[in-house]
Length: 205
Image 1 (cartoon, one colour):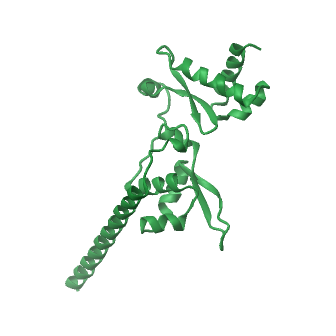
Image 2 (cartoon, rainbow, N blue to C red; image 1 turned 135 degrees about the horizontal axis):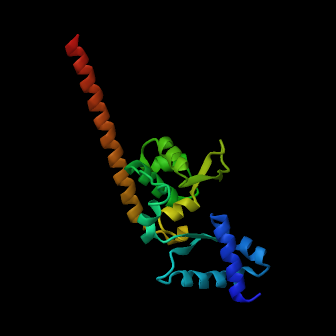
Image 3 (tube, rainbow, N blue to C red; image 1 turned 90 degrees about the vertical axis):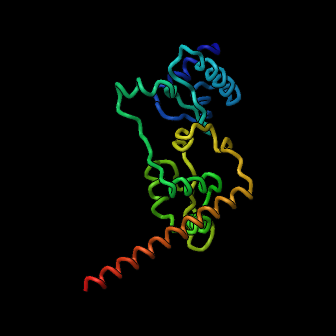
């Protein structure tokens, strides 16, 4: 087969699958080396960048997926169901950032950084498909480890977690302090609301 034929076969596989396909799987299907497959996919990515193309070839870690170019979102939703959108609160964003930068990470480690319970945030992020269970820590109780998913990479326009902006130890400590301050503020507000409710009850009696 020629390179053009290999590319056509890879395109057929990616189009039919719809989801991300590992590089090694594509190479195996075409009976070529991973190195040659990666070179062909790089060529395909450049070809799809042409102005007359409506799709793109995205790399997600060691997998590849065909997807619509972002600039055609409005036209796409005119004829299809609206793609999934996420409502990420500050708590969810904080939790997701910690998982992204510290993965694999346990719930306890996340809560130590945030200073508040993070079970609800973790459950919601798992429901959104942005994080997933990534095994268990070899420690007493075998706590679950969490890591990001391919959906996380797609949602934030990343090819791999290594593309995340670099955050220094000092910057991460600042993030931790902000999260702790926010947790203290929320606890204070809750205490004030509780006190106000008790006072109101007392007045009514």
